[in-house]
Each structure stands twice: as structure tokens, then as C-alpha cells.
Image (cartoon, rainbow, N blue to C red; front, side, top):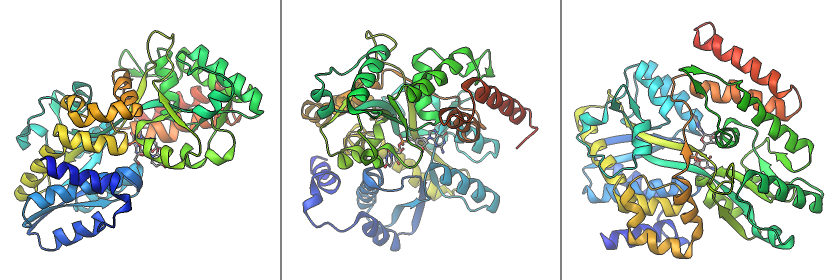
Length: 420
Ligand code: FGO
């Protein structure tokens, strides 16, 4: 076990200087000779998450001696993935496994496409209940949490030092610091994507809840105030909306001071930053407790259409990827939260955290996290309705109240089955 762990490390993190065969090519080779191939459709587009997944798969396949293999199939980003899966149901050509958000599971269950985890003979003991419970529908668990992230605060430590500023721990401190630094730099230093993900952190931390007595409410008082707060941040010159690409791809477009973004972005931030990158838990309503992160990232699901051999192989693979050791390796390579509670006590992690405080930030933040609603229509809602409203308000095309009132009407029509 120790040897194989060192091998993963060399493949994933420290081995950049050593010429290694590409994991993708190794897998191709492994699958060329295998009798059973279980496809895993995923939404990783590149960088550390895709590499770390491939490294796990190489290792798993190696342990199987060549007769069977798991084959990762990249399908674009997460939304491309769910679009392709929906088409695959219609065409009857479904993979053995795929990544899925909790709301995706609800949607795929409407097509009766997903196997309950209990039918795979998997033991989920030791997994973080926050993640496992989220994949439950009517008391049954349908997904195995795999790559789950939480939002954290990223900051430019050089900029903070220049102004003698402390890392803010409350929203009030955050706004005061962002204002002071933005005035000094004459440009907004809080970079944010005007989308449902960024909004969720501010909304949850202000006490917002999308579900009120079982009803989905987008235009609540807290909702409108949250959007007004972000719009005001832009007007006051401390918040900069990023409308193209990830924040880590936009460092050069101004002076980056802060962001509140997924922990899975860490490796991307680290390699793009030309400054001393800091991480901290999210600013809270008060300094007493961190703010609430949105949980993102996906679960692995197994489809009913997979034949018995593929199902058995998928079950073994899932068992392998949730071990504390696999989760520790995958976590430190990417910034995902290890889903196994035992991973936090793994010497790999405890030793790693001592020299890499960013990973400690993620572990701490994972105790303060919330989910979006896991209803079948949520993906469409979060991008096409709520996300659209946030963007319109932030770009000054509608007031926050008008944008969210329109979004509420759209959601009610959608859920009543009037538009689809
Ligand atoms: C992303 C998306 C959903 C849903 C949330 C849903 C669908 C959000 C958000 C929309 O695994 P996470 O934490 O992070 C991703 C990871 C792997 O690609 O790395 C992040 N990344 C990648 C490249 C890069 O340059 N920088 C970087 O940070 C990437 O975000 O997932 C967070 C971002 C979004 O995709 O725009 O989850 N999300 N809920 N997507 N389809 N459905 O219900």
C-alpha cells in the first residue's frame, strides 16, 4: 500500500520533472486487452482533477491484472456531461458509471436509470454523512460521493501586506478591507463570477434558504438583499464581475485581491498566481464562525443498464476510490474534500497539512457548508433562471428585485409544467 501511494504521488504531484507515460495512454493500453470495460463518463476538462482521476484509474486497473478495466470518458464540462447522458438514455447507450450532482440523480431517477448503492454491496461506513445524506432520495442512497468541494476564500497575500491588512473573518471586515484596497489600487479587488455558485455563499451566510415550507423561493427578502449587496459592491468599486472563464484565468485583468470560489480551483489558482496565494475560511456573518460554503463537485453513480459484469466492476472501483488513502491522495492533489472521515487522520494528510495550510482551510471549511436544492429541475434553474437573473442585475440590466421576481415567475411556470 505504501509503495503504491508513493507511486500515485510521483504520478500526480511531485513527478512533473520525471518523464512518465501519460496516464491516458496507459489506460488505453489497459483497456485494449480487457474483457470487461466499465466506462466512466466525467466532466473534468483538464488540470489536476482530470489527472488525479486518471491516476486513480491506472492504479485500480493495474491491481486487476489486465482482464477488466475502468475507462474514463471526458464529456466536456459538467453541464455538457448531463446533456450527453440525457441523450444517451434516449439512445439506449449508457455508460456503466458517471459523475452526477445530487439534482442530476433526481433527474436520472425520473428515467429510472440509476442503481441504488445498496444493490452494489458497498459499505459506506466512515464516509462523511453530510455528503452521503445528500444523495438520498426517499431513504435510498443513489450516489457515492467522490469529488466534493466547498468554497473557500482565496486572497493575494502580497496585496494584503502592502496595505498592512489582516485576513478578514467577517463580512463587515471583508467589505471594509476590499474597499480600502480597491481605493488604494483604484480598481476593484474582489473578483467574482456573477452566477448561482458565488451568490449561494453570500445567500447562505446571510441566513438564506431556497426552500420555504417545501416551496422553492428565489425572490425572498434575504435573496433580494444578497443580490443588492453584490450590485452595490460593483457600484462602490470594490467588486469586479468576471463574465468570461474562471477567476484563475482572469488574474491579469486587474488587481486580484480576493475571491470566494471552489476549493477544487486550488491547483488552477496556484499555477496561475504570480503572487503569494493565501487561503482562509469564508468570512462569516460575524467573526465567531466561518460563512457557509456551497457544496459542489459530484458523486459517482452506476446505471441500471450496465450488465452484471460491469456492475460488479463498478462496485469494486467505487469501493477503491472511497478508501481513506485514495481520498487523501485525490484530495491533496486537487483541493477536493476527502469524503472519507478517516482520510483526515491519515498520516499523509496530517503531515501534508502542517506544511500546506491551504488543505487545512478546506478541511475546516467543510464543517460549514450547505447544499442547493436537489430537485430534478435545479440544474436548469441554477443556470438558466437564477444564474441569468444574477447576471442581469450585476450587469445593471435589471434591478435585483425585478430580476429575482422574474426568476420566481419563471420557476413557478417551469415547476407547474408550463414551460420545459
Ligand atoms: C462547478 C458547477 C453545477 C451544478 C454546481 C449543477 C452542473 C458550478 C461550478 C458551475 O468540482 P467543482 O468544485 O470545480 C470544478 C473543478 C473541476 O473542473 O475545477 C474547477 N475549475 C476548473 C478549471 C479552472 O480553470 N478553474 C476551476 O476552478 C471547476 O469549477 O465544481 C464547481 C462552476 C461551474 O461549472 O461554472 O460546479 N455546478 N452545481 N454544474 N452542471 N449542475 O447542479
